[in-house]
Amino acid sequence: MPDDLLFTAMANPVRRRLLDLLRDGAQTAGSLAAQFDLSRPAVSEHLQILRRAELVREEVRGRERHYHLTAEPLAAVSDWLHPFERFWRDRMRTLSQLMEESDDRDGSR
Image 1 (cartoon, rainbow, N blue to C red):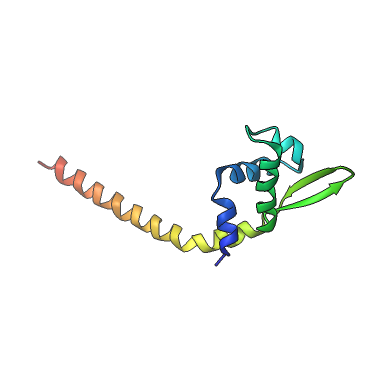
Image 2 (cartoon, helix red, strand yellow):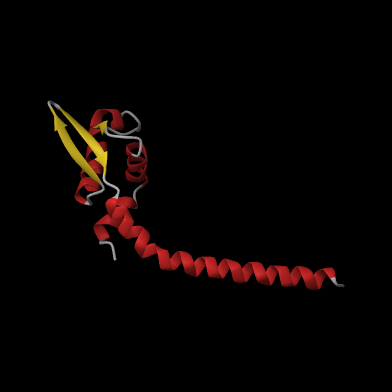
C-alpha cells in the first residue's frame, strides 16, 4: 500500500493542480506560482510537500529551481486502487442489470 505521505500530498487541490501543470513538462517555481492566486512562498511549500512524497523532483539551474513530475509513485496508488475499481465496476454492472429487469417488468404491464 502506498504510504500516507503520498495520499496526504495528493489530498490538496493546489498540489493536484501542480501535478497537472507538470504533466506537460518541467517548469520553474516562478512559472508555477504565476498560475495561482497564492504567494510564491505558499506555492513553494506545496512543491516541497510534493517533493517529500517523491511526486516531483527539483533541479537547480543557476538561481532557478525547475520542477519535474515524477509519476512512478502514482503507479503504487493505481495498483492499490485497482481492486476497488473492480469492486465498483461489478456493483455498477449489478445495478445496470437490476434496472434493465425493472424496465422489462414495467414494460410488460
